[in-house]
Length: 578
Image 1 (cartoon, rainbow, N blue to C red):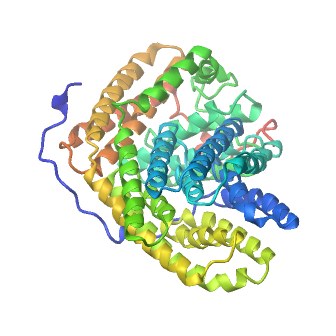
Image 2 (image 1 turned 30 degrees about the vertical axis):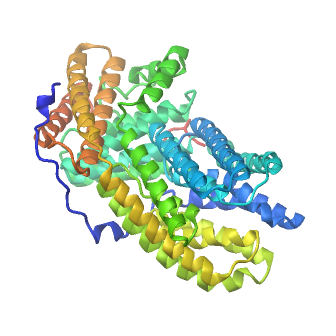
Image 3 (image 1 turned 120 degrees about the horizontal axis):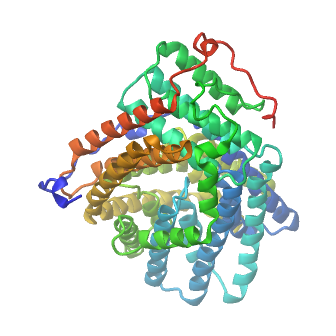
């Protein structure tokens, strides 16, 4: 697609919201998993150090324990690999910071290294699509270590503590696989069914996009889950059913939505995986042969060494000079360096906190970065008040300090899915209490420094985001439009092919539509760029979803069992118990 598809226009800045970013949302359906995991992963090393009388080493074990916050939406096979990589990345960042701190006391050098580490961590997490909490935890640990007293001979032992605590975090997050092996896959399939129910009950562009994204995420989860099991094959049928049910119009939308929500509740539960009603003799999910979905072929392709090498090359290209991720990494570098140097030049606050504040702001575009700036500032300012209230309690005994940190770690994860600022109210006192493990600090000094660093970091961070442009966002939209057109053509041509090829073509089209919407939303929130082809994007989405509907109907999903249309109870299989 040529550049003419993106109309030229005067670069402009868009209005920024003030109230909407602070509204509370619904909590995540799995908020308790990272909350309980980080408490368990932190309690073991902290209570061990308490028994040994070495709470001054908690900073190093906490670096590994915080890895328990990641990967809770991934199937266990991929979660284990992801967490292992995160523990190594955390240790590498901490090691670089500790070595730098032991070799120099120059504030300028320390700030430069901290900003560089933050930019690398941001680019790495974005390129690998590491989910929440993203790079901010890595930056928090490495920036704090840069400005802590350190001797070169101490570094190996401190890194060993991080690795040991990271191993505990790995066990805590991967251990549930022994109890409920397909738990993440079941939740992903349930979300797809629930999104399909919303689409049936309230047809429209928003629900259609949400259903497509949920179905795509469920297929990706199943593809990454490892070898097929009876439960996973049942889940494949359910995801195919959700995909089909979300596309053609239903005769009775209310009853159909209720039926899909009932399937979602049973799928999310601990009982046997439910079976969707058969769509008819030609339905793609009306057979036990999982090959008809093309899933086995895609799993085999993922295991192919050549495919893995190609994936690594793609990852490296995503970090190259032409990458749309590069401007955000440059914003992180400039903003963190500016925040740290400004703090040091004024002689107030702590440069590490200013760097972390700036690094935590950077999202996919300027509008989202502005939202995070408001949320972070409000949350930190309220959090210092909470810290002032609990500080006397935490100083009553070492055990009280440990318990306060564990409590705020749990509260942060319990609240942050409702809104980032609410979670920051708990994160801030926890971060301040960590300093108490080494030695008590004057409360007024800690509170004053944190307030100043928050304000300076937020101002410097957002200024860098506004100054450093990201005109590549429009190019990403152009590439996504081209990919969607190709995927739509391939899906239309696959009508006469075997069911496996048709299913793979439909999944590719769904993935391209999800990528197109993400690219369009990202570009819409950027400043200083060309006018976007909004009409072309909407037209591509409409035709893409029409193609999905037509191909779903050719697969036969509209013909459902009569008892299902009457709202009868869905039978459960005998082979799906966990």
